[in-house]
Amino acid sequence: MTRLLTFGDSNTHGTLPKFADDIYERLAPEERWTGIVQAELGCDLIEEGLPGRTAATPDPDMGAHMDGRLGLAIALNSHGPLDVMTLMLGTNDVKTAFGLDAKTVASHIEGLVDYALSEDIQKRHSGFKILLIAPPPVRETGFLKEKFRDAEPKSRALTPLLQDLASAKGIEFLDGGKFVDVSPIDGVHYGAEMHTRLGLAVAAKLATM
Image 1 (spheres, rainbow, N blue to C red):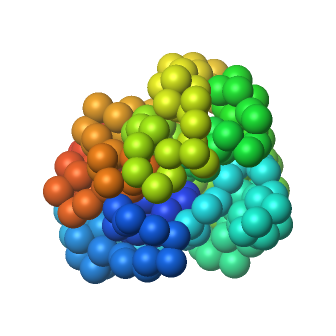
Image 2 (cartoon, rainbow, N blue to C red):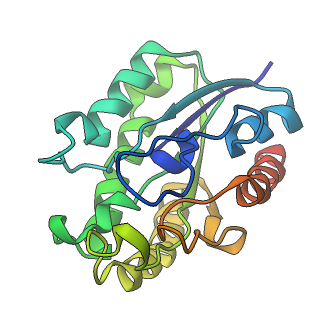
């Protein structure tokens, strides 16, 4: 059975659109895009979605563990052997407070890809494939508007950079924005219908790998 690791942030975790920070609602396992992929392909699923995770930036408010470099190292050294990994990050990285442009975010994601492709990690898992997913662009709306002020154009600029990155590294790519629109409630998350769309798209892509 194929073993799949899904590494990402709140949109891999399945966080629902919300009106305030103190609300915590998560889609059921079978409603999340990760669960839909599992149902479609019959794979062994390992979910590693952490709300607030970035590619390489510790969050002064949420904690140093939001740095994806830490999480990926732990995940790839504790799970396995893997056959395939999906990587979808970049949404939290464009927060206003971090002051990062799209090129910098892409370079941080490149660091994660390089780690996953490193000889030691690939040998540990007897080789595994990577699907890099560009996250759906954010919208500046709802209670998260100030946290993501001026983030929408950076978010949109990230997609072609990640496509180029995937091509350069010889890994697969999927544009999540072609299948998902973020919710107008908070401009970052999305509900069950969009998770279904993304899950089916990811499953179809993985089936070709």
